[in-house]
Image (cartoon, rainbow, N blue to C red; front, side):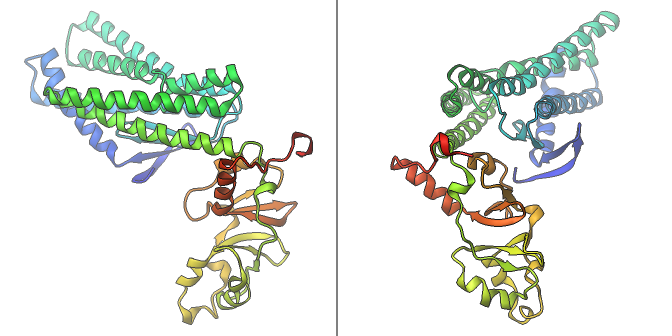
Length: 383
């Protein structure tokens, strides 16, 4: 997510934090210290309220982190790749691959809300126990607040609409029942659009009636609509690419150049005759070593082009997306790296470059699907 920075790891998964998290902590602490705690436990000092409110807000963010960590751990145990966990103002996002089965999708989705419900139950139990032992006080109120917040978080996330976890649960159920993953994706996305619009309307009406919390509800609804729309579009892409192998989509043969050439010579001998704006590079043994873009070559000063090697300005193979000819294109595109090294996909078979796949190739397949033309081979001819 743009605006986030890596701050460490949680259970072996990279943890990122969006700039909005400190803002959220301040907002939560302000509401808890200036409204909730004074109403629940009147007569305490401002210092006590301030300290307790900060502790409560941090504990709630810790609860959100445990919710997302549960998703990540469950996914990894089921063989689903997990790239990172990001905390931001509306909760958390766990970036992971697509589960292979409906059962795995169901478990990965439901474990987050279950974790929140368990945390909420434990916090409520601790608050009730502390009240029994010491009476009603600020620590008890913080625990009760934390418990109810997590219960609310768990129940809200179980609403049957993507991108909420409940939407993922429904998605897994439809996938299991129909065997059609894309249909399940579209249904979950549609439910997310409907619920998102409803939350925007409810939040706006609430705000007009004098409750500023309605703006927050509308913001959540807007986020849901945006994500649900994106997921419905992605479901359409997956439908268009269903059964298409990398070999069916790649451009071949492709112009490739030696990575030891100077930038100037590479431009004259390779780039000037290439059909693509990104060109693969080969090492001394003739194996792929990376890719370079025309705009990167153009950025090299003219006086340096005769001395600088093209490999020094290229994207190394470790940051490129590499695929084998027999892989499903939809699965390869899921692991395309964001940023400069994502596309093209270098198609490599037994160490030899076979071709590349660019966004132009993918868009062409999608447009052909819109015309009712499929490039997927018959089942009997697939490797």
